[in-house]
Image (cartoon, rainbow over all chains, first blue to last red; front, side, top):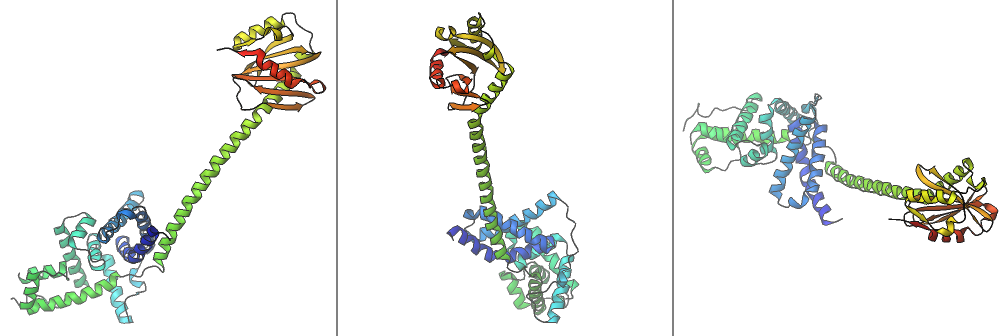
Length: 172
Length: 231
């Protein structure tokens, strides 16, 4: 195996799973998400020599996947199958109670507007900074911050995770 | 930072390390509780976002890439086969071209048997005139032995079709401008022996009955000298 192949294999091993998860939240279709990941990583093979810096590679991969997704829309309007992500087996959650909680949260995420869902996935799932998200999504940093705030606020409210009300009960 | 700003900062980025935010959290128990709620929610959120990934996804991507490369190799192989096929086809066509021409000439001789007709007194003049139209000069030695001459159409080209006598044998000749292939050929067809030779600007073909063709090569060499392409 040559060094280029070795680097590609290592990169795929490191990013494929997270890219797939991001793609799922982008298009809400696991099958399409896999195609997007395949296409993105096959493109990455062609540009591998310019992807030596890990941070730059991450942004490049996410931007490319996003572009591939947009390109699908340009080619064809997809009739999405009704994918109930809440019923998918959870490889992360533990017991049945945790599964139900996770399924409910996934359902809420699924219903969240795409403009809110995408930056949230980039931040909470992939650890992207506000600046990185702004670069990937192509909006201002303040717009990213607004979307992140609203996304979490809606989700927490929807699943009853907001117990205390700072600024109302006690004021410093 | 006030509580509203704190809440906004927590919901925007629960992992923020902003100094003002952490100072406010140290001083405000309500916001600290809220930060704990947001932190717990963030853990649940990350769990929910980590949807299952298809089994062996990285291996499948790597396999798809290698298959793509093999597909590229296959395309290259197909292109090579195509080029080779075209090359072989062209070579085959080149190889067979003089034989096809000879067949057409023999077929033409069957329809227009000049070699069986009586000598025409103006044959030499006729051949000279044809030579002028084709850009070919004929040596006087050849003209002296010409029995018949006629302009004919062979493979869509104007061709000098003539018969001359050599050592008591009637030899049929065709002079065809613009034919081009790399070698001379000898053949025997339908009771005729023939030789097709390539000259500088065209083709000369000679035919005589099979049993009388022993001198054909010698005659061909002679005609190569006696047919002079002009220009």
